[in-house]
Amino acid sequence: MKNYLFIAAAVSFSLISCKKAEKRTETTENPDGSVTTTTVETEKSTSLDSAQINATVEKAKEKLNVAGEKIDAAADKAGEKLQKAGEEVKDATAKGADKVEKSAEKVKEDLKKK
Image (cartoon, rainbow, N blue to C red):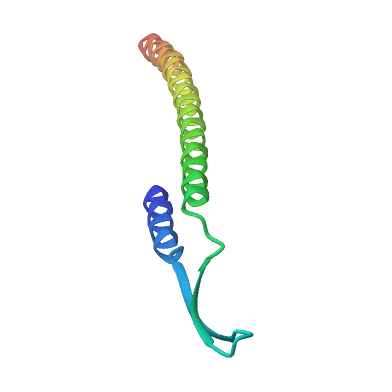
């Protein structure tokens, strides 16, 4: 989901980073009395550069991948701990069941004696 947001932001920034052109007409009078008209076109680019945006998006992707790997590692560790805890619970219930069976046998023997 975050990858899509970063990609959408990069696309929108690249569209915004279009160049703006400004045309001015300058009229100058020459020493001989003639008039010269020149058209000056200046291009202004926005401060956003698509190469910088792409580099930022790539860095963000790398950071997201690293974060994803860390999350996977943490999930694996948690899974191992849960598996270990499950085995300990199984062992504890087995021991408890043995104790209950032994107690039941003792109660039967005590009832037979009476």
